[in-house]
Image (cartoon, rainbow, N blue to C red; front, side):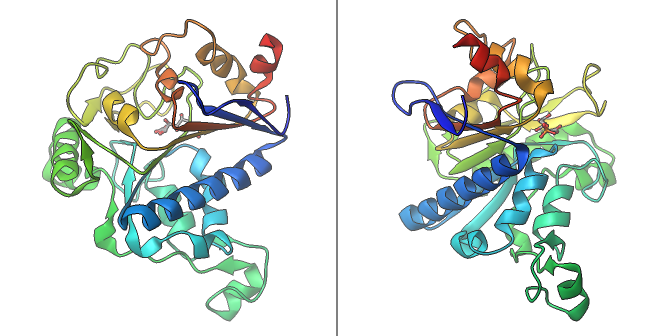
Length: 288
Ligand code: 6PG
């Protein structure tokens, strides 16, 4: 299985795309992000995009920061949210805000092309100018504020929940409808910071505090959007690469996969697209 769509968009299954390597995965994912955000902007003006942490967005953002995708994304209509974060200040190296701040929003996108930087040094180094978003449209979990106030992840999650309800995406029923959620997949099957056995599955909350996981790094308390938010999103894009993810991907796409044991199963749904490299998809190929 290569360069192929292995599952259709009909029924309840996601679209599954397998590409040769992580570089082509990142480029394809960025293209899909840009097209989805563009289409959402055309459809209803404001665009609500929830991004993620981990290594997934680091490879995708540089493509978004330079043309042609940069010109396609309706940056001026965008509201940037996070699926989850570690309970650390925003400028901490382990913060999920850092990839966006350092790669997408600042002058730090490696283009490899001269003539696109804002200053001579940038041009020589192959840097492009970071995309500009108004600070009041960038909405990380308020971990920095919580830590400064001496309050914990519960406060942080409750405050994010309240912000989403007051100023977040449009709603359908009891849930917010993100135009797009970009997500990675943990080796244990976690998605966002919803870990196997999480007690957030039946929660009506939109955001929740999560104790520090002991089985995956970093061992830090987390804050996360909840399964109901993922279920309600208009579009979901899961991006994962590498042989270390092959087993968990195969288990999620097995016939009787249980979302509580494998939260990534939540994103095996209509309206979702999974983009994998061949290494991550190896277990799927064996099943066919
Ligand atoms: C986190 C991330 C997490 C991540 C996955 C995949 O806080 O660690 O939000 O859910 O997306 O672990 O990580 P990679 O993108 O590095 O594969």
